[in-house]
Length: 313
Image 1 (cartoon, one colour):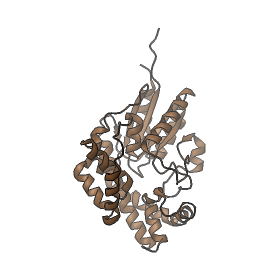
Image 2 (cartoon, rainbow, N blue to C red):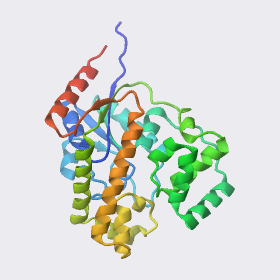
Image 3 (cartoon, rainbow, N blue to C red):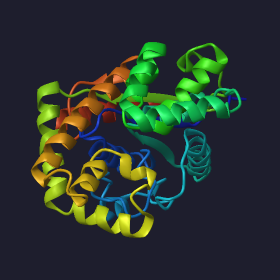
Image 4 (cartoon, rainbow, N blue to C red):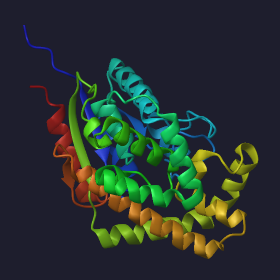
């Protein structure tokens, strides 16, 4: 009797604006796949422009999962994402199709593939002190502390994301061990043959594309979209601290001009792309494709790699 072969799972990573959507669509259409988004903001409804989600037309071409599944006032942790994504992946496999996980949120992807670590319980006195410090000196101050405690964690947590920074510092101090080391003690996803692909386009061209995308987001209505989100969920809605939306909020509050918002958002996205690449390059399992995902030669190379991976044995 022939041995059972684990079903395939394709994972496509890469920095923002690297063409992941275009490549994922081609792979999904060619190999009877369904796409599972791995984006910490695309899970929210009403956040279209600032997330650069696949368009409705693109989503109509192949089934997509974990896009528009929550309202912006609902929290989405890495653990909740992992649970939802694993459910989606198993469902896709049961339908005889190929799951293709696509995105650039490294923390969520690690939670999905490697599982979550047994975190220590919350230390409320320490959290209260850290929150007070953030209010007095700003989240960037805490981010500098995290950089000294755990540079790897600081590299993937945005300097303005106070809740994640506070939790990382709290876990590191209470466990007396960097949080990134604790991430290794997890429940990994098993039962799949996983192919990890990564897009790594030339840096100058990537930054130019990021700059164009940032400008276009504001041109097509990011501030107006943000105004509607503020009306429905308030200024303190956590997803509004993400890149692009945070700058649109500043425009609405007359703190900066639209031109300034574009400049700040573009810089933030370029810095984020650099952190994404730092995160993904630490994963030796990724097979890198050295250009944008919508380039014909890269698409051909990726198709050949997936064809080989799908062959059993």
